[in-house]
Length: 302
Image (cartoon, rainbow, N blue to C red; front, side):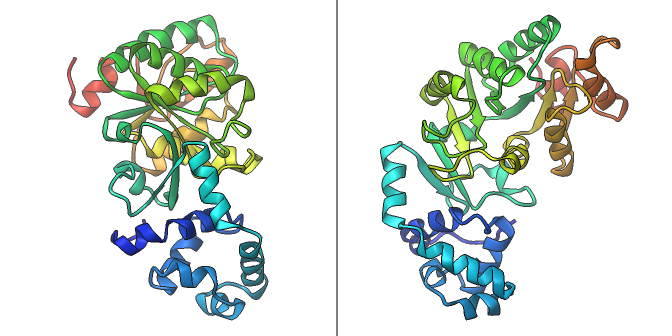
């Protein structure tokens, strides 16, 4: 966890926080190293020579790459893009930054939000699953998510086709939801593109979230690393339907690593889409047949 105290100077340095988030070779851990070495003076860090990055602990080739990439970024233009797209950059020292997410091993140092930031203060539950859900999976999701959303739980998912999209839709019909995107939050980057309309609906009564700045297209690795944000925002993760190789199981693994609860819906032993969820239960995930199975874990009765 990045240990920093918020100051007026940190707020004034927002363009530099955004700039560092635009650098492909800088993730949470490398940013923490830079922040510590330059004692929070990101303006100085942004214009530092290669030699200082080497002194910071980076290999010469990487230090040179960082400095070269910085010269390609127009910070003023990046801030204009945020304003144009109604995207807010919430830095990790901001009191509005989600408290649960801040506790994970490698929280994003900048969280981009399009929608209602105040939603982070409510209890959140991740709901994920296969892109090719069954009639059973759809029925189970509608039953569980509608009740949870009605109790003011925020449903968090990844806007993917299948279970994710359905979770967002049912949540919106009964309450609110957060979608964690593996790309920038501008309309041109939101994926899948066919869910752009759903994304706009989510913004009206929830939030789109990403660790990536506007203009960043989705890549294979961004789909993987966003799972830690889905689970990190939440008290636990509910897996509805998932085959053995489902990406939804990565969210379950992230939850376990973050010491969060993992819930799983049992399914037909002959169904491929239940192999993953049934295996999770065998491995110790909490079996869910009603929302009481979730609420009781958190000592919250109906």
